[in-house]
Length: 269
Length: 343
Image (cartoon, rainbow over all chains, first blue to last red):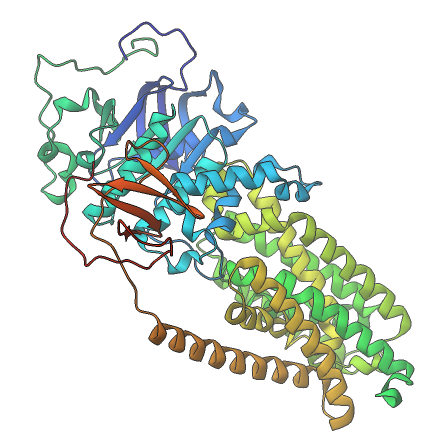
């Protein structure tokens, strides 16, 4: 993380501000993410941590500053399947029956040209979907209706959907929220598995504790700005991870002997 | 049956019913998925305005209805996209305006044109002509082709619009396409079930499909089968029972739905009472290829050696395989024991 950067960063935000229709939620954020990093984005509800992820994805509007993905301007990124988005969902839409396989297959859809939808039936395509389902441990439920799965299992379906699109960067919005402790551990194991295979991740979360083993760097967002960027070890769970359960007082600044890395320019890190 | 097929207008009617029964559920499934089951009704109202304009200006009512409905459908979708907050009221204004304008225009039709308002509202399948049939067949073919090509994309957008946007699918364009397809179905179904019952043909077969299928694909196939059988069956029934075709088709659809829902409910109850769920001990770890636990190939799955016993994945729980089991999948189930230290 402190070694000199050789490759192009996966994400680079330069004094980026994001918002939705007239309302700016995040102001002047600088953030650089290198390949292989696993970043936990922490902070109280409404601080703007999800908005940063949505801004990177182009789902929140960039009002000033720049966003670069894989070295090119984000809005010029032609292949958006390089981003594996796992949205915050407590349950999947269940208006219509759909099997685990059918939902995960959505991750492959952008890979098929419009005029050749039959390519989805290729053996290699089926294989990618099957593998993604196996990685999240739902192999024996591939033909089950997703509505019959538990909340934690549905999260794993969403992770598999992102994985199936073969992304280089995973962006996960509260993957463990609303899931009991046992299933949080299962989800953490699934993420650890992706990290072991070399994935770069940005995880918006309240529960740093469950993800301690995989997170290489923590970013704390407060009132639409980054107030801490450094090793997760410097943060105690009670301070930050479960912040939202307590009163909303200001974060204590990190101890001065620990690196307080708030890049003021894009190349500070 | 042969007496029925010997009549030219009945042959046309049956063919039209077959086409509509096939295409309507294919489009309807996406509307159900997006929670917009009633949008077809609104577009039906708009189509009546088109019929009215067509009659008043002595142009083909079906053609004008097609244009008006297409424009309205695309407008609605753009409205939904750009003005989320006021969309609901705007739809109400459009739809009531549409049906009111249609009724007034048809009533004021130039003398000499014999327009049957109730034919458009409730269906007049026996008035389908050869020329109509060619138009319907062309439109139906276009709808079937478009849904066939775009099925995966439309499914992705209807399932999770935000995700679809994030992976770069043209969400707004796909929604506009779905709106246009819905408009086509509305116009094609106008003669068969009537403008007031159009939604039924798009939605009800899918309601039944949801009871009978186990997957998205399976449910949709059932829906198409039900749509075709009910619309063709409805036309035949209406011929012999001397009832209006549209109402007959919809009543058949509802009867099929009630039977299938009851049957599916009974089936679920029976299955639940036969099998009781089984689980191994609480387990906070997903086994996979290289998690460190020794793997044992076991029939169609892989077991993991774990604290001296074997685990087999079965959904969100792990089956405990005893040391001397004979390879059956869920033969040996230990009582849940609070074992820790899985990592």
